[in-house]
Length: 199
Image (cartoon, rainbow, N blue to C red; front, side):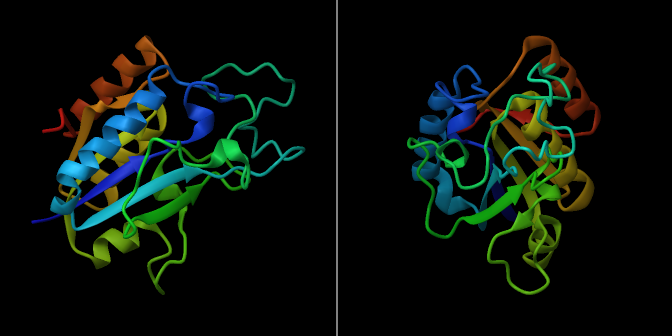
């Protein structure tokens, strides 16, 4: 059975010191790197996603709080603007050269990596769904930031659109909030997505 690892949004703005920092983000970056060093070769495809938002005055379809007062549920501080340091991968995340890169949230609200576009994609594989189906991926593991938003959304879409088995490796994720994480993990379980730890 062919498998893929999707590393979600391990970017400077989502780690300590960033404009939308998630506690434990930098530690997750380092732990994912360690996991890739130990287990990366077991995956047929490795994907890394990034938020890649347009700069102000574009509010990215309301994703950025226009009044400067985000609710941290549907509106957010300015973060991960395309081409800025905040949008780059965290320095402690070391990805193999064969990584497939996906950018999302270009002038709109995207949470799932499956809403984005594959960078330098082969013809007919510009969307992550098409790429994984073309490579006959049946099992997807999802890691990254944030458990309760983009990780959950990506895992749900992986199960719905591309793979028969999807797991979130919870020890390789970091979350925004306790309540939203409980809600997200409950939904993942209801959707037959496995909650596992890395080995």
